[in-house]
Image (cartoon, rainbow, N blue to C red):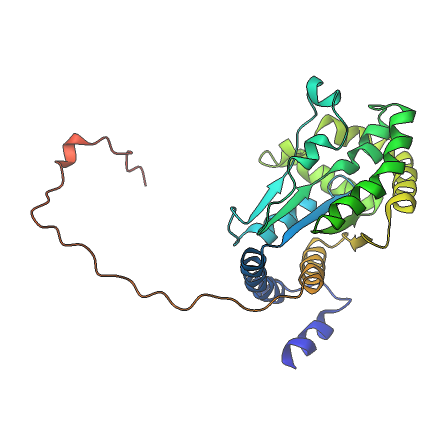
Length: 270
Protein backbone atom coordinates (compact mmCIF):
# COMPACT_ATOMS: atom_id res chain seq x y z
CA UNK A 1 0.00 0.00 0.00
CA UNK A 2 2.89 2.35 0.78
CA UNK A 3 4.31 1.91 -2.75
CA UNK A 4 0.93 2.80 -4.28
CA UNK A 5 0.73 5.91 -2.07
CA UNK A 6 4.24 6.93 -3.16
CA UNK A 7 3.20 6.66 -6.82
CA UNK A 8 0.12 8.83 -6.25
CA UNK A 9 2.19 11.41 -4.35
CA UNK A 10 4.55 11.77 -7.32
CA UNK A 11 1.89 11.86 -10.02
CA UNK A 12 1.93 15.22 -11.81
CA UNK A 13 5.00 16.38 -9.88
CA UNK A 14 8.69 16.29 -10.70
CA UNK A 15 10.00 12.85 -9.79
CA UNK A 16 12.50 12.79 -6.98
CA UNK A 17 15.66 10.87 -7.79
CA UNK A 18 15.24 8.62 -4.77
CA UNK A 19 11.75 7.56 -5.85
CA UNK A 20 12.83 7.11 -9.48
CA UNK A 21 15.84 4.96 -8.58
CA UNK A 22 13.75 2.85 -6.20
CA UNK A 23 11.01 2.20 -8.77
CA UNK A 24 13.53 1.54 -11.52
CA UNK A 25 15.44 -0.97 -9.38
CA UNK A 26 12.20 -2.74 -8.47
CA UNK A 27 11.14 -3.05 -12.09
CA UNK A 28 14.60 -4.15 -13.19
CA UNK A 29 14.31 -7.04 -10.73
CA UNK A 30 11.00 -7.92 -12.38
CA UNK A 31 12.66 -7.76 -15.79
CA UNK A 32 15.13 -10.41 -14.63
CA UNK A 33 12.18 -12.62 -13.65
CA UNK A 34 10.60 -12.00 -17.04
CA UNK A 35 13.89 -12.92 -18.71
CA UNK A 36 14.03 -16.24 -16.87
CA UNK A 37 10.42 -16.96 -17.83
CA UNK A 38 11.08 -16.21 -21.51
CA UNK A 39 14.10 -18.50 -21.45
CA UNK A 40 12.36 -21.33 -19.58
CA UNK A 41 9.20 -21.27 -21.71
CA UNK A 42 10.96 -20.74 -25.02
CA UNK A 43 9.07 -17.53 -25.78
CA UNK A 44 9.99 -15.32 -28.72
CA UNK A 45 9.54 -11.62 -27.98
CA UNK A 46 10.10 -8.57 -30.19
CA UNK A 47 9.85 -5.05 -28.78
CA UNK A 48 10.02 -2.15 -31.24
CA UNK A 49 11.06 1.33 -30.12
CA UNK A 50 10.21 4.14 -32.52
CA UNK A 51 9.69 7.88 -32.16
CA UNK A 52 11.11 11.30 -32.74
CA UNK A 53 14.87 11.87 -32.69
CA UNK A 54 16.03 12.46 -29.08
CA UNK A 55 12.73 11.12 -27.73
CA UNK A 56 14.51 8.83 -25.25
CA UNK A 57 14.31 5.43 -26.95
CA UNK A 58 17.94 4.61 -26.24
CA UNK A 59 17.59 5.59 -22.59
CA UNK A 60 14.76 3.17 -21.88
CA UNK A 61 16.45 0.37 -23.84
CA UNK A 62 19.58 0.89 -21.73
CA UNK A 63 17.56 0.63 -18.50
CA UNK A 64 15.76 -2.50 -19.69
CA UNK A 65 18.94 -4.34 -20.64
CA UNK A 66 21.10 -3.08 -17.79
CA UNK A 67 20.81 -6.23 -15.67
CA UNK A 68 19.73 -8.76 -18.30
CA UNK A 69 21.68 -11.55 -19.96
CA UNK A 70 22.69 -10.42 -23.48
CA UNK A 71 22.29 -14.02 -24.63
CA UNK A 72 18.58 -13.80 -23.79
CA UNK A 73 17.88 -10.11 -24.40
CA UNK A 74 19.71 -8.45 -27.28
CA UNK A 75 19.44 -5.05 -28.93
CA UNK A 76 19.24 -4.59 -32.69
CA UNK A 77 20.16 -1.18 -34.12
CA UNK A 78 20.81 -1.70 -37.82
CA UNK A 79 22.97 0.69 -39.80
CA UNK A 80 22.10 2.19 -43.18
CA UNK A 81 21.37 -0.67 -45.59
CA UNK A 82 24.13 -1.70 -47.97
CA UNK A 83 23.66 -1.75 -51.73
CA UNK A 84 23.06 -5.50 -51.53
CA UNK A 85 20.44 -5.05 -48.80
CA UNK A 86 18.71 -2.32 -50.79
CA UNK A 87 18.17 -4.88 -53.56
CA UNK A 88 16.59 -7.41 -51.17
CA UNK A 89 12.98 -7.77 -50.07
CA UNK A 90 12.59 -4.82 -47.73
CA UNK A 91 11.86 -6.89 -44.60
CA UNK A 92 14.63 -9.41 -45.28
CA UNK A 93 17.37 -7.94 -43.12
CA UNK A 94 14.94 -7.51 -40.24
CA UNK A 95 13.72 -11.10 -40.49
CA UNK A 96 17.31 -12.24 -39.94
CA UNK A 97 17.24 -10.48 -36.55
CA UNK A 98 14.01 -12.02 -35.24
CA UNK A 99 14.32 -14.00 -31.99
CA UNK A 100 14.87 -17.69 -31.51
CA UNK A 101 12.98 -19.58 -28.80
CA UNK A 102 13.87 -18.22 -25.37
CA UNK A 103 14.98 -14.84 -26.66
CA UNK A 104 13.80 -11.21 -26.50
CA UNK A 105 14.94 -8.74 -29.16
CA UNK A 106 14.69 -4.97 -28.71
CA UNK A 107 14.69 -3.02 -31.98
CA UNK A 108 16.16 0.47 -31.61
CA UNK A 109 14.31 1.60 -34.73
CA UNK A 110 13.00 -1.07 -37.04
CA UNK A 111 11.29 -1.71 -40.36
CA UNK A 112 9.30 1.45 -39.65
CA UNK A 113 12.26 3.44 -41.03
CA UNK A 114 10.48 3.23 -44.35
CA UNK A 115 7.37 4.93 -42.99
CA UNK A 116 9.46 7.69 -41.39
CA UNK A 117 12.91 8.84 -42.40
CA UNK A 118 13.03 7.00 -45.75
CA UNK A 119 9.71 8.49 -46.84
CA UNK A 120 10.28 12.01 -45.52
CA UNK A 121 13.86 12.30 -46.77
CA UNK A 122 13.13 10.71 -50.15
CA UNK A 123 15.25 7.58 -49.65
CA UNK A 124 12.51 5.38 -51.09
CA UNK A 125 10.09 5.79 -53.97
CA UNK A 126 6.42 6.60 -53.53
CA UNK A 127 5.61 3.09 -54.76
CA UNK A 128 7.93 1.51 -52.17
CA UNK A 129 6.35 3.64 -49.45
CA UNK A 130 2.80 2.68 -50.46
CA UNK A 131 3.80 -0.99 -50.67
CA UNK A 132 5.22 -0.80 -47.14
CA UNK A 133 2.03 0.62 -45.68
CA UNK A 134 0.07 -2.15 -47.41
CA UNK A 135 2.38 -5.08 -46.60
CA UNK A 136 3.59 -4.14 -43.09
CA UNK A 137 0.35 -5.17 -41.29
CA UNK A 138 0.40 -8.51 -43.14
CA UNK A 139 4.07 -9.01 -42.33
CA UNK A 140 3.39 -8.39 -38.64
CA UNK A 141 0.37 -10.69 -38.62
CA UNK A 142 2.54 -13.36 -40.22
CA UNK A 143 5.30 -13.19 -37.59
CA UNK A 144 2.70 -13.12 -34.81
CA UNK A 145 1.09 -16.27 -36.23
CA UNK A 146 4.55 -17.86 -36.14
CA UNK A 147 4.52 -17.49 -32.35
CA UNK A 148 6.35 -14.20 -31.88
CA UNK A 149 5.05 -11.75 -29.28
CA UNK A 150 5.24 -8.31 -30.91
CA UNK A 151 5.17 -5.09 -28.88
CA UNK A 152 5.41 -1.64 -30.47
CA UNK A 153 6.24 1.62 -28.67
CA UNK A 154 6.16 5.13 -30.07
CA UNK A 155 8.00 7.74 -27.98
CA UNK A 156 6.28 11.10 -28.36
CA UNK A 157 8.23 14.28 -27.57
CA UNK A 158 7.25 17.91 -28.06
CA UNK A 159 9.03 20.31 -30.41
CA UNK A 160 10.35 22.41 -27.52
CA UNK A 161 11.65 19.41 -25.56
CA UNK A 162 13.36 17.93 -28.62
CA UNK A 163 15.07 21.28 -29.22
CA UNK A 164 16.38 21.31 -25.62
CA UNK A 165 17.81 17.82 -26.03
CA UNK A 166 19.42 18.67 -29.34
CA UNK A 167 21.07 21.72 -27.78
CA UNK A 168 22.25 19.62 -24.83
CA UNK A 169 23.84 17.07 -27.14
CA UNK A 170 25.56 19.76 -29.17
CA UNK A 171 27.35 21.10 -26.08
CA UNK A 172 28.23 17.72 -24.52
CA UNK A 173 31.29 16.14 -26.21
CA UNK A 174 30.48 12.63 -24.96
CA UNK A 175 26.93 12.77 -26.34
CA UNK A 176 27.52 14.74 -29.53
CA UNK A 177 27.80 11.53 -31.54
CA UNK A 178 24.08 11.02 -30.94
CA UNK A 179 23.35 13.93 -33.27
CA UNK A 180 23.49 12.63 -36.82
CA UNK A 181 23.11 14.83 -39.93
CA UNK A 182 19.69 13.23 -40.35
CA UNK A 183 18.70 14.31 -36.83
CA UNK A 184 19.57 17.91 -37.64
CA UNK A 185 17.60 17.81 -40.88
CA UNK A 186 14.57 16.49 -38.99
CA UNK A 187 14.26 19.88 -37.26
CA UNK A 188 13.33 21.54 -40.53
CA UNK A 189 10.86 18.79 -41.40
CA UNK A 190 8.90 18.57 -38.14
CA UNK A 191 5.50 18.83 -39.84
CA UNK A 192 6.46 16.34 -42.55
CA UNK A 193 7.48 13.83 -39.90
CA UNK A 194 4.24 14.49 -38.02
CA UNK A 195 2.18 13.78 -41.13
CA UNK A 196 4.19 10.61 -41.84
CA UNK A 197 3.67 9.42 -38.27
CA UNK A 198 -0.09 10.00 -38.52
CA UNK A 199 -0.34 7.97 -41.74
CA UNK A 200 1.86 5.22 -40.29
CA UNK A 201 -0.28 4.93 -37.17
CA UNK A 202 -3.49 4.80 -39.19
CA UNK A 203 -2.15 2.07 -41.48
CA UNK A 204 -0.27 -0.13 -39.01
CA UNK A 205 -2.12 0.20 -35.68
CA UNK A 206 -3.68 -3.25 -36.02
CA UNK A 207 -5.52 -5.13 -33.30
CA UNK A 208 -2.89 -7.89 -33.32
CA UNK A 209 -0.10 -5.35 -32.70
CA UNK A 210 -1.28 -1.98 -31.40
CA UNK A 211 0.94 1.06 -31.12
CA UNK A 212 1.63 2.01 -27.50
CA UNK A 213 2.39 5.73 -27.27
CA UNK A 214 4.74 6.87 -24.49
CA UNK A 215 4.66 10.50 -23.40
CA UNK A 216 8.41 11.13 -23.41
CA UNK A 217 8.80 14.82 -22.47
CA UNK A 218 9.83 13.64 -18.98
CA UNK A 219 12.59 11.05 -19.49
CA UNK A 220 12.33 9.42 -16.08
CA UNK A 221 8.57 9.07 -16.23
CA UNK A 222 8.79 7.72 -19.77
CA UNK A 223 11.26 5.04 -18.68
CA UNK A 224 9.18 3.94 -15.71
CA UNK A 225 5.89 4.00 -17.62
CA UNK A 226 7.29 2.04 -20.56
CA UNK A 227 8.95 -0.66 -18.46
CA UNK A 228 5.89 -0.96 -16.22
CA UNK A 229 3.68 -1.39 -19.29
CA UNK A 230 6.00 -3.99 -20.84
CA UNK A 231 5.91 -6.05 -17.65
CA UNK A 232 2.10 -6.16 -17.78
CA UNK A 233 1.97 -7.56 -21.33
CA UNK A 234 3.53 -10.97 -20.67
CA UNK A 235 2.22 -13.10 -17.83
CA UNK A 236 5.23 -14.56 -16.02
CA UNK A 237 6.14 -16.30 -12.80
CA UNK A 238 9.17 -15.95 -10.56
CA UNK A 239 11.66 -18.61 -11.61
CA UNK A 240 14.58 -17.12 -9.70
CA UNK A 241 17.13 -19.93 -9.13
CA UNK A 242 17.81 -21.11 -5.61
CA UNK A 243 20.94 -19.72 -3.90
CA UNK A 244 24.06 -21.35 -5.31
CA UNK A 245 26.34 -23.33 -3.03
CA UNK A 246 29.94 -22.75 -4.03
CA UNK A 247 32.01 -25.93 -4.48
CA UNK A 248 35.33 -26.16 -2.63
CA UNK A 249 38.29 -24.73 -4.51
CA UNK A 250 40.73 -27.23 -6.01
CA UNK A 251 43.90 -27.72 -3.99
CA UNK A 252 47.16 -26.45 -5.42
CA UNK A 253 48.93 -29.82 -5.14
CA UNK A 254 52.36 -28.48 -6.05
CA UNK A 255 51.22 -25.87 -8.59
CA UNK A 256 53.38 -22.75 -8.65
CA UNK A 257 52.47 -19.52 -10.42
CA UNK A 258 55.02 -18.22 -12.96
CA UNK A 259 57.22 -15.30 -11.83
CA UNK A 260 55.45 -11.94 -11.78
CA UNK A 261 58.10 -10.39 -14.03
CA UNK A 262 57.29 -12.93 -16.76
CA UNK A 263 53.93 -11.27 -17.37
CA UNK A 264 53.13 -7.88 -18.91
CA UNK A 265 50.94 -5.95 -16.48
CA UNK A 266 48.86 -2.85 -17.20
CA UNK A 267 50.55 0.17 -15.57
CA UNK A 268 48.95 0.99 -12.21
CA UNK A 269 48.26 4.65 -12.87
CA UNK A 270 45.50 4.80 -10.24
